[in-house]
Image (tube, rainbow, N blue to C red; front, side, top):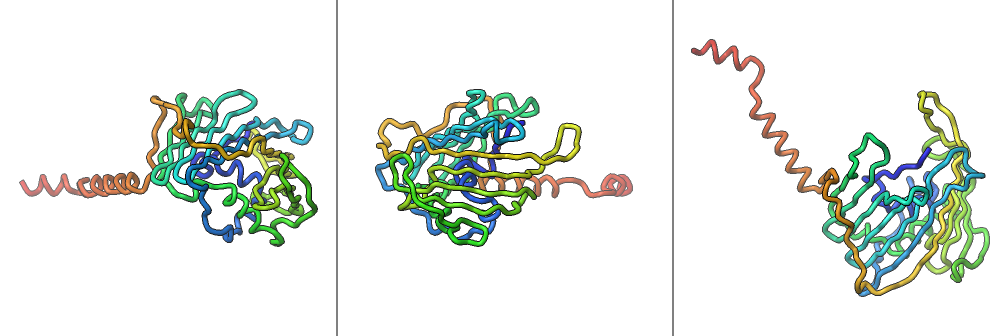
Length: 275
């Protein structure tokens, strides 16, 4: 059993945020604070590894490597399946446009993958402070985190946080531990355990499984944007879905025009009778 990525909901960002944030708390958290962009002339380069240790998981889930280059006005995110070596998601972000390619997860999807277009949004250019603010806002929340101590990670002073076991949105029993940077609460490490996650077997029967997801920051550095490619690779045969507001409005107008031009019931009979 392999874990999948939801391209429209995630755009890759959930790989960092959700992995470090209790799902139940994330659903109720609206106080993460205003967007704090990366300083102009800088890129925040982060490599995050997501794994599912076999000894802690009921079923196999492919691991993921998430690499992000985020600047003030543009960024890129590349997600690779560490089990197969294949690119799972390749996204570019600007203030005006998001272009995100997703590779096929099974034989029912387009062999060349899908490319999604979305309107740009500064919030998608999440800085380390932005991600950390989402964690910090959940401190001492009844369904969020409570501090448990201090440590170091990647040479950074850090704090340790925990979320007590609780029922999650999917009905499982979830708990989370996090190691976050001491100054901005960016999650450097997290372990998300769903002890009884519901799932459906191929024969349609229901069951529960243990899912233990470990997210580890491997690289966290500030680099120059010079020479860094922030556009996605070419995927000329991918199926394109344009989900920008203007494109949706154009499709809506086309449907309305088609409906208005369609003869109403009884039109043929009335036309014959009028002859």
